[in-house]
Length: 283
Image (cartoon, rainbow, N blue to C red; front, top):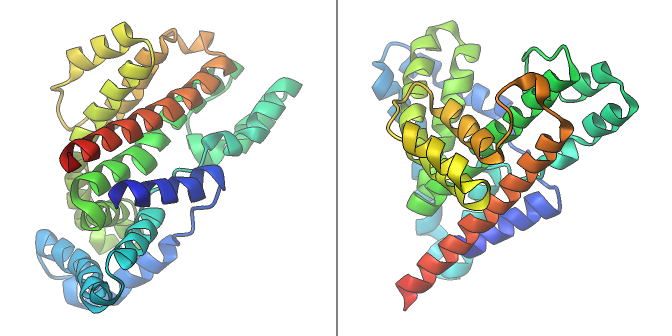
């Protein structure tokens, strides 16, 4: 069921380009409504009280409907939860305007078209913009696709839901109310712990589908680095596997395409590995 749910979700998001339906405003409203009950609580207790109702709702849905629809409901629920917790849409679709403007030589228009992806990263030259986009492709795929998939595979809908809620808390709690600043910091620490293993797995996966010597060499050297540079590890492992020049001034649009291909190949490797593991369990 796990594999089927993933395939359904990936088909809808990656190939039909359907996704991104979760509205953060819903979660922010949820936090605002909980404020009177959790504002004076210890941060760890508050995080538990925020997450538990969602997980209990999933349990309740199982209890109410599974006995009637059996595996069909489990499949529908798993697909729906995964659909809202990961974003597997092909980033190439978001980069159409970027590549088009690059071909025209309009750097400013290219930068504007990907501003939502690269953030406030300095990109004064074409090469700097190319490198910023490459890093954004690797980081975005790690944060919004591979980590969610990992926790779904490991712990099902409860694992991916827990991780997704922690990420939402980390990114949005302080925006809702300044008193949630410490809550957001604690959620960020939990996210770092949850990201550590997936980041290593992603890095090693990159090396299997790219330049193995460079990629594996980077992972071997930095495998046991701490929690502080988890996202940096995922990005730098990808850059090492792509075997790009560390000097950003030499970056070209080709590395953007190579990064997109790297993500696609890594996703395929994950699906093949999951299939083999499940077949091994069945046998």
